[in-house]
Every structure is written in C-alpha cells, then in structure tokens.
Amino acid sequence: MQAPRPIKKLRGAGEPPPNLADYTEARRRFSWAEARAELSGLPGGQGLNIAHEAVDRHAAGARRDHVAIRWLGKDGERVDVRYGELAERTARFAGALAGLGVRPGDRVYSLLGRTPELYVAALGALRHQAIFCPLFSAFGPEPLRARMSIGEARVLVTTSRLYARKVAPLRGEMPWLEHVILVDGEAPGTLSYERLLDGAPAVTRIPPTDPDQPALLHFTSGTTGTPKGALHVHAAVLMHHVTGKLALDLHPEDVFWCTADPGWVTGTSYGILAPLTNGVTLVVDEADFDAERWYEILERERVTVWYTAPTAIRMLMKAGEAPLRGRDLGALRFLASVGEPLNPDAVLWSDEVLGRPFHDGWWQTETGGIMIANFASMEVRPGSMGRPLPGVDAAIVRRTPDGGVEVIEQPDVEGELALRPGWPSMFRAYWNNPERYARCFAGGWYLTGDLARRDEDGYYWFVGRDDDVIKSAGHLIGPFEVESALLLHPAVAEAAVIGRPDPIAGEIVKAFVALKPEHAPSPDLEREIAGFARKHLGPAVAPREIAFTGSVPRTRSGKIMRRLLRARELGLPEGDLSMLEAGAGATGKAGDEAP
Ligand code: ATP
Ligand code: MG
Image 1 (cartoon, rainbow, N blue to C red):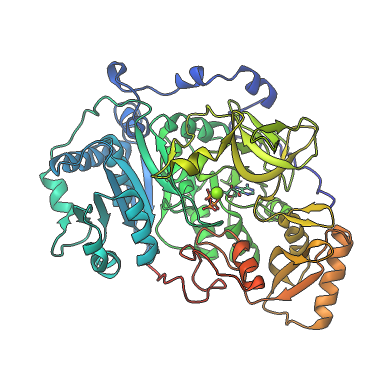
Image 2 (image 1 turned 180 degrees about the vertical axis):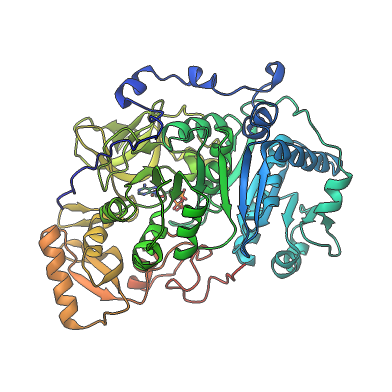
C-alpha cells in the first residue's frame, strides 16, 4: 500500500522549541551518564528513588506550589494537588506502611479507579521502597486472583465496594494478603486509609535507595496469552524523565493529559511518573471515554500535550465532528499515541480535524518506557512508529537455527524488532518466571516478539506480532497493513485480520469486518469491500475471505485479540480470556464487571 505523504508541522507562534531539536545530532551526543545529571538523586548521594525525582525534589524547590495533579472527578469535581501537598501525603502513606511493618520489596497493590488516593499510594509505596503493582479497577475476581497470587500481594489499597464485591470472597485463598486498606470506609478485616494516614508520621526523608532496587510490577496486556508480571527498578525513572522530555516534548509550563489507566504500564510510566519528574501539571480524569467530555477537558484545561491510544482515536473519529463544533483546542501543541499500530488515516484525520498530527510511538510493558517515537522536530510519517530514542539501540534481526540472531542491515526487510539491553527501564524479571525471561534474550539482544521493518531513513514500520503475522503463498503479511486498508472503506468501522490455514497457500488472509451503524451486511457489500482491498493492497495481500461481525474482540486496553479469532475459526480452545473487553466480541466467559 502506498504510504501517505509525510507531515511536517511548522512551530506555531509562542510555542517553545522542541526539546530534541536535531535527531541525528541528539543521538550522536547522547549518553545515559550525562542524562543522569538531569535527575537530582537522593540527597547526600544516597541513590535514586522514583518518588524523590517525581515529587520531593520539586516540593523542596521553586515548584512547591505548582499544580502536580489536576484531578477531574466523574461528577464534575475539580481538585488540584500541588507538589508540596503531594510530598506530604505520600510521606504519610510511607509512614503508614512503615507502621504496618511493610518492608522494602514487599508488594503493595492498588485496585482503585483514577482517584487521588491511587497516586498517593503509588508514590508513597515507592518512597517506602515497596514494590507497587497497580491493578485495573474493572478487573473481575479471576484476573485479580491471578495477578495477586503471582506477585503475592502483602498490602492492597482499594475501595469498600470493590473489596466487598471482588476481593472479600477470595480472601481465604490469599494467606499472604495481610493488610487491606480501604480509602472510603471500613469493613471487618480492613484498615481505614484516612485513619491510617492521620495517625502516621510523615517520613520526610526517603531512605537510601539502590537504583537497582525493584520498584514496580506491571502485568502485560495479555494479548497473546496469560499476562506476565514485568518487574522494573528505581533506575527506570531516568527513562521516564528522558522520554517525557524528548519523546513527549514536555516543557515546564505544559498541561499534560495521559488517558491511560495506571493499571496498564502507560498509565504509570506516563500517567504518573514522566510528567511529575518533569515537573508539569498532570490532568487525571476519573471518568471513562466520552467524546464530548474529552474535547471539553482538552479545551477547558488548556491541555498542551496529549497522550492517548489508537482505540480512543478511532472512537473519536467515529463520533464525528459534532462534539468538536465550536471548541477551541488551540492550546494543544503535541499529540502522541501508543499501544497498537496507529493507522495512517488516523494521523491524517487528526492533522485535518484537530490541527495536529498524532505522533505514534512504540514500546512494551517490558521496556518500561518509550523506545521508538515520532519526535516533535521530525516530519511524521503516517503509519510509522518513528525512530529509536537517543540512547536506545534498535535493530531488525532474524533468529538463526543455532539459537543466535543475525542483524539485518539492509533497509525495508521484515524481521523481528530487537533492542540492545542497557536502557534504564528494561524489565529485570518476569515475576517468578525466570525461564520465560531468559527466552527473551539471544545473541546480546532483547527480542521483542514484534515484527517490523526499517526504511532507509531509519524509520521503523510495524508489521505485526510474531504470532499474528500471516504466511501466505510465500508472502509475509502483517495484519495491520490489511486492516488499515480496510478501514479506508467508508462502510468499515473496525477490522481484524488473521491467517486461516489453507492446503495450497499455507495460510490465506481472512478479514473480520464490523460495519458502521448505517450499513448492513450483504453479499454486494462484501464483494465491494473485497474489490476495494484488492485495489489498495494487490491480490497477494488482500483478504480472500471477509466475514461480517458485530465487533472485533479486544483486550481491555483496546488491542485486537487475533488469537481469539484464530481459535474460534479453528474451533480450538479460546485460552486466557481474563483480559477480554466485556461486550467486545465476548462470549460471556470473561467474568468482568464494570467498576
Ligand atoms: P502480552 O505480552 O501479554 O501478549 P501485550 O504485548 O499486548 O500483551 P503490552 O506490553 O501492553 O502487552 O503491549 C506491548 C505491545 O503492543 C507491543 O509489543 C506491540 O505489539 C504493541 N504496540 C505497542 N505500541 C505499538 C505501536 N506504536 N505500533 C504497533 N504496535 C504497538
Ligand atoms: Mg507483549
């Protein structure tokens, strides 16, 4: 498929110059040791602690009264928490943990909506050197039980409602869960957050922290199987800081909104840590997606930098221009996206309708921070994930039969995306699964499990996940390219593409297509879409079969679960469905409920 032309934006009047002005130059000069000087470290050279970099150093300086978190409640509340206040509250939370006998390395979990207590618990646990693990509040009992057992949670911070409905019935199976802290009430066998904090001494001095000390446990999205618990250390904060500055282009006066929930790694690395280490104001919205509400937030809060995901962007596109009418989004300066491939038409849409292109970027739970990005100073190539961050070495590799890897030097050849270990937020373990961890590395590279290609200018293009790529009549076909072409058809709302086994071709491309509400399935429409795809993709890549479906199955973080479509197609077991979004092609087995 012909890639759309690149988009180069000129800087608007009054906009600050991009932090990364010249990509090649920045890459050449970059060193992690030098970047480290941007952080302050614990006083007296006592190591590196995420909470100190995110909160305390600002609270102790000129940004004490700067708004750290602007919390927007579901029901219209609007609460500002300043850096100074955030330092006090997190110090008390750390004091409360100390009072409970929680030791460094113990796991402190949260099961909370996006309320201020979640942010206090996260940063308070980090300053106490506990390992913090945020869980998505919409998880049902089964995903909760699995994640809490894998990490053996010692403390859980939650609400009385979530506790009664989801945790209390399982408590007997969780002997390691010693303390449950309720932010909004009390129940037998639990502690009150308010009373605990009122009675706790503020631990104003963060104890010495080794940069390699474990800090965060994050579960992967479960797109390809059972979620894995990736462990990150305090040194990761350098990555959060540097990527916030270089990839998201954060400047001191920015108002930044990351729409991800901290239950996913994006919602912690960029929905808590990167904006705070950069000392900006972070907008937190408690409510779920709503096009009208989102545009209103962007306008009213004068959001300057916005980080969201392709699913949300597609939902905004679907909502049309009516909710945008009459709005002034003139404060928006930089738009970024992560989590799934960003279809080129979404980039073109945002450029046209929002006046700014979305900048795609690539990373994983395992990498802890952005690895590849379209930077503010570069032209955006719609459909490309961008170029590797300064300090990050990426390559396209091929696995060799002897268990090693071979780097593919020529451009435009598809292979596995690999990263050279050494960036500060690399995961240090899959919790309790050393074999699975070891399998991620070969020949001195971390193998990401994603297929991609690099063009001659060094831009990376996503092809598909290793497991999702279709091998048809000698061609390697990435589902993303086929789905992107299908989405260009005016009747198509969603598309997911898999390989269906075929005795002659090996696999054939099969597309599942959900139509926009004003269109109904018919053999004519099927033929028309098939012809449209052939025209855009050529006959070797276009789907040979098209099936209409009500919706496409996705994980709760919005990723297409192609493995589920494949399993259903072949009549195989559906596997771990704990991450399946309820209603999105669900069969009712996911067991999740709304929070
Ligand atoms: P699991 O590992 O449990 O199967 P997951 O890989 O979806 O789940 P995450 O770590 O949340 O869990 O997601 C990272 C993956 O998301 C990447 O490996 C990649 O496949 C996909 N991804 C992230 N950003 C992009 C992007 N910009 N373009 C294409 N794919 C992306
Ligand atoms: Mg993964």
